[in-house]
Image (tube, rainbow, N blue to C red):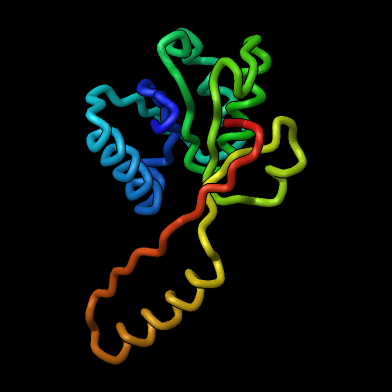
Amino acid sequence: MEKGYKNILTLSGLSINYEFKERTEGYRKALKEAGIVEEHILDIDVTFEAAKKAIKKNARILKNIDAVFAQTDLMALGTIEALEELSYNVPEDIPVIGFDNIQIGTYFKPRLTTIEQPLDKLARMGINNIIKIMQSNVKVRKFIEPKLIIRQSA
């Protein structure tokens, strides 16, 4: 959105688990804060093949899309492959951002721009939260700031 994109498609696994509901809510919140009212969400399986298939199946909406936020890196890579097969250039025509910063994203071209979660902090926090829940039976909820890793796809 900082680059002026307003029609951002997100590929989500909304019906899979809470994690993707949270990511989709983050997408919606960012749109709202930017004054963007139209959201574009595809609820799919969170795999390479599902993303590739969804992009090809929904190719007609791409003419109205400025960018794609895939909620996993595998989905982002499947999106890039589908876009290239549909004769789009990434990032020139449609930039793509993933989420997770998995290593394989550094091997494909264009190199994947992604959002990284600090897994070591998440693991420590998870263990500490389990201990707190066991000791006091209280629900614990914390947020760790993700980091944008800029590469070639966006």
